[in-house]
Length: 468
Image 1 (spheres, rainbow, N blue to C red):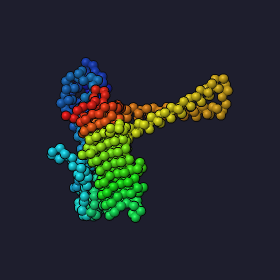
Image 2 (image 1 turned 120 degrees about the vertical axis):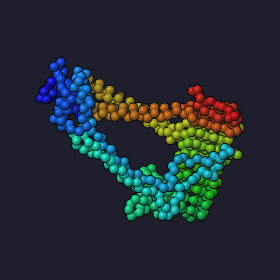
Image 3 (image 1 turned 30 degrees about the vertical axis):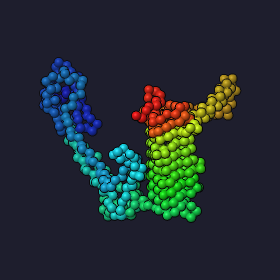
Image 4 (image 1 turned 90 degrees about the vertical axis):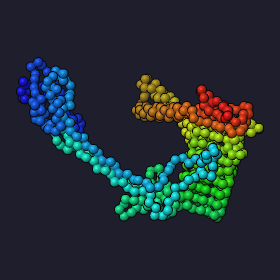
């Protein structure tokens, strides 16, 4: 039997990081070594291990020590702490930020009147309550010492405009009647609605409003309307700028005169677009026609009403374009593009231009360095030229890094362009020659008239398929 004093020569004790597990390792073994489980327990206790000792594991080591040579065996277990649960804010109203799309009825028709659904609140209405954090429980390590737990964090309200808290700071209420909105950083606001009973002209001037703007008239050329919420125009827009953090609805239509911009973070809905520039984060919905206009939508463009005509211009949508008629008998060039976010494709063009500029600058730097290297080789490099050489070498390294970063960004966008399998261009009635279709990285020119077809990316190319 090995004496207690000699166990130090044979055994090595180690612990997990939080000391919730103790490991015993037999580092040296010969045939004369033998001990009892009680001796092993005594060794552990002399080393400070007093909690959660597993006598069954010690018994196994004592009976067959040769099987546990040079192997760390868990011989004592503490209790791990239970961390607390963070508090949270429990909302009592809808804060739906899902893309707003036209409502599809049971018979398959699309009700374009149901495009905007606002989250309204009345003064004094409860918006959210604070749920307290739950405490945790400490653990115990193998020495019997407590292991601290991580307490749950208290949730905090993010208060925006027209929001009040109760005296206990546990509930959030609307301070006015209005529309509830949550910003990108989580702040809750209640925006009121501002109405203009007439045209936006010299009588009213430009409008910049943190809420929803309703205009019961027209927006005349060269004026600007900006709203953090939605913009609704019961009339038309002529060569003006409209920018909304929500959706834009124009009862009449848009005559852009190739100036101005209609820009919405969500949807744009209107009767027609002529010579205009329109951008929407989600969908553009047009009931009559899109003529010679630049239209971009992060998700979809619909122009499939009874007229549903798209002629000239350039349409870009992330997923789908649906039109009743595309082009005309005069073969007017009409470009439609799906399969990538418009800003991503525009970013690709910018990056390629940047890469070209970087390559030109890098070439100039390399030529200058080569000249300085030649001077150094013949011993004609003075102190000023030496300093310039060091500076140009650093510049070259920086240019190479920037070049590689731009190439990586271009490659990532091109890979995204390859993933356009769900993109689609649908023709409800007729598409004429002269139309140019782009899906992802692939282009198709329409030469002959076709009816009731749709175009998708299939088998490495753009395929034209029947709608039937």
